[in-house]
Image (cartoon, rainbow, N blue to C red; front, top):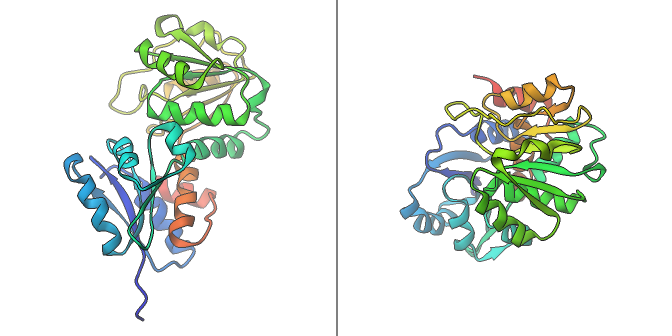
Length: 277
């Protein structure tokens, strides 16, 4: 009766739209964990003070989303190699002494999503083509390199950001101009949209997919809507397509395990619970 109930949550601004409370709430109920997971809308100017207070309030960790991922990394006492390489944190673990341990599980979630929903997918079978060069793209590029993709063709609406990734990640990165990016799809075995284009309330994804190889596996990190125009056009060309919701589900598992001591499973029941209105 005297045990402290472990608390976790997600910090962002805005954060009311987050599906993470529904996701972690399902796991807490499924595994009978006496814990809670709550959304917290925290202003950038308050982040450092809030992170210092949360461990004292019984929090064992939090997820971090826009716009706090880079700042959270800079405020951590311990940083995993992959979070340092990506330059952002999406998962924080609070130690009993108050130290903050930062990790980034986006790349793990990306790979696990493709392996679960595109059985037999082989990242080493050919070049990867990636749209976008922001924080999400950094996680995806890191994961693809670790998984053995031979070459990563990268394009971004602002070419300079793509060039910055090439200078950082090395010769495996080939940069294409956004307005001439269609040809980079030719022969690509894996194609990923890491931008917000096609998301509800965002501009459409307008790059031609005519050069897509029907044998390619195509993934969109956007999950609202689940079937984006990008994925629909890829499916029409005969490609195997994977939506972005699975990445959200899988990236959450390592944090839940660190906070609550149970490695959760990503199941159809979880997916339906998260999608339930």
